[in-house]
Length: 341
Picture 1 (cartoon, rainbow, N blue to C red):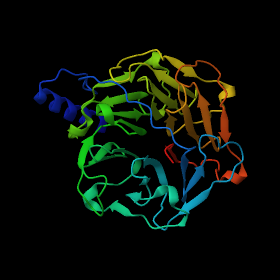
Picture 2 (spheres, rainbow, N blue to C red; picture 1 turned 135 degrees about the vertical axis):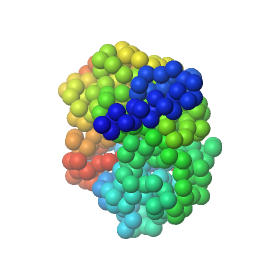
Picture 3 (cartoon, rainbow, N blue to C red; picture 1 turned 120 degrees about the vertical axis):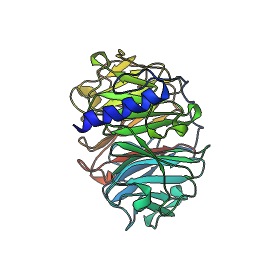
Picture 4 (spheres, rainbow, N blue to C red; picture 1 turned 45 degrees about the horizontal axis):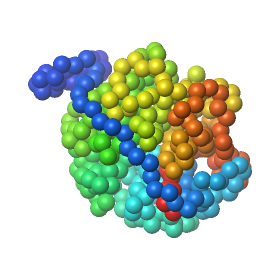
């Protein structure tokens, strides 16, 4: 009944806007993918656990049973989920699910031990109830938060504190993850329940009902409860599929892609060590991309090279795992990478 009601709301909104749509998604404009980051000095890798953030320095080389450089704790942490690092401002955003809040830490690369967030976004006015993912547009100063079936858009990411009121974008789906292509104002949304990845064009102008510009969906896509998302410098979208057959599937022309697409590449098989891939982040400094994948069931961070172009049973180039790492089974929630420090 709830799904039927949501469809009625979407259909009414779309008819009023003069669009011709499918019952579930609206199709609109187009765009092109983003570009790689700026090379750094080995980088900082951030990993969220149920009660801490682990930071590994020399991120582009860390491997095996290596202890984190530091463990960041805070009394504000309550089941932190996905995280995002603003590399320009050395600022870490945390979707703090249990606290119904977004935690913001400045000078992230210098933090150690028990710290207090620089800012906390929370309270009734924010609409935060179940935040699981965050994405930041540093140019337009926008903060996107995945919260249940909605995306909350805060208009002053760099200064919002307390209980600012966001724009609420209703998606009518349970959101598994977000990926922002800020350069093209496009937001990708994974839908694990329906095996779909949606793309919102003109993301910064979205309001009330999410208008979908393209949706990758159908049996040929091989999507299987998609969650983690990444975008390479050639405009290819990488998707982590979290249940059997677990895989990382890649789709070309993400900025305009829609429909039942056969993957451009598909990594799967026992050599991959994938068990349930979740949040992912791509290091664009490495030729053809270096993909860092959170896999809580494997208690590992799996790191692959050439992920965007290789099909088959690809073994990870590096694996961060073991007792010294602080990574435990079902105890890894999110990841962020800063290759500029």
